Amino acid sequence: IKIMVYELRDDERNVFENLAQELHVEYTFSHKMLNMETIPLAQGCQGICILGISKISADILRQMKEMKISYLSTRSVGFNNIDMEAARKLNIRVSNADYGPDGVADYTLMLILMSLRKYKQAMFRGNVNDYSLKGLQGKEMKDMTVGIIGTGRIGARVIDFLSGFGCRVLAYDPYPQEKVKGKATYTDLETLYEESDIISLHVPLMEQTFRMINRTSLSKMKNGVIVVNCSRGELMNIPDVIEGIETEKIGALALDVFENEDGIYHFDRRTDIIINRDMAYIRQFPNVIMTQHMAFYTENAVKSMVSCGVKNLVSFIKESRADNEI
Ligand code: COI
Image 1 (cartoon, rainbow, N blue to C red):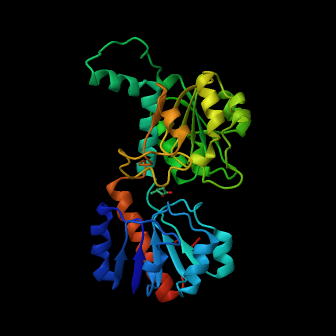
Image 2 (tube, rainbow, N blue to C red):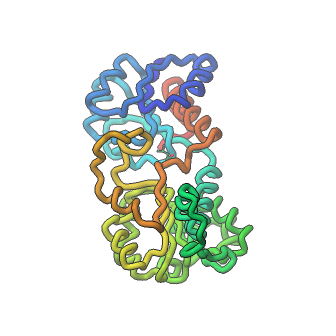
Image 3 (cartoon, rainbow, N blue to C red):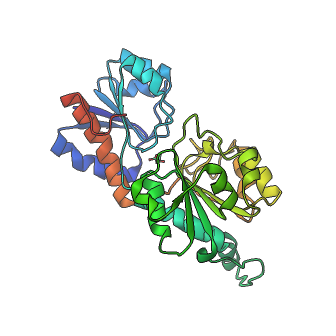
């Protein structure tokens, strides 16, 4: 079985290679994204595996069809980057990954605590031997109401972890889960916005969630609210969020994702001219933490991501089915 792997990171190579013998797979690797320019690299392959950043348009899917490639796997949980409607029309079968939620849940807790204890500033000060406390007074978790939007696997895990802190936990999800009910109180979104000191987003990017954090939703939130996003940048209307910081509506913001991060995050762009003004402006606020879409990045997760990416393609090709077909 021949598989074309795009967006390869060096740390994934071993995991891919360890699976090759067991599954009788041969790879062609590329660090590049899948696009119209790079798709010829997949000539002769039966399946394509991407990491979840490449934007997969109808044009690319049509080209895949033309090249007689009918299977696409993404090593990510999120698949908002793939035009699924076009894939269905063209009968291109697509799968995603289902790595464990713990890495992202751990990271979310870290960002919540860093925001609450103003750790970005404390860390910066330490680097220049400034050990003053002024402006660094924090708050305690037990006094907080934390609102979790989206109680799928990651949101539910964040709620598990929060239960050790003694805080009040509110949750919103159109599909409430029985196992979450003992640990959090489901509310409507309005109540969650109105009553939460900390709000963390764990929803997929789709039409209903696109820019859900905007001027209107922010206006319902408490003054000084802490907002955390380890999901997708496009859940936020960034100009509105910037206004929220400037007016001090938002007390702290922690973002592991950012709109139009592709081509920036996960690359060393130190000597380049980066074209994303909002990203540069928002980063400079003392109460804004931004990281390079790395909440997912643990040993366990990477193993599962690669394994899902390959195994789903192999079962598509061999059995015309896959565990994680979308
Ligand atoms: C996901 O799995 O959805 C992620 O956000 C990981 C990223 C490498 C695309």
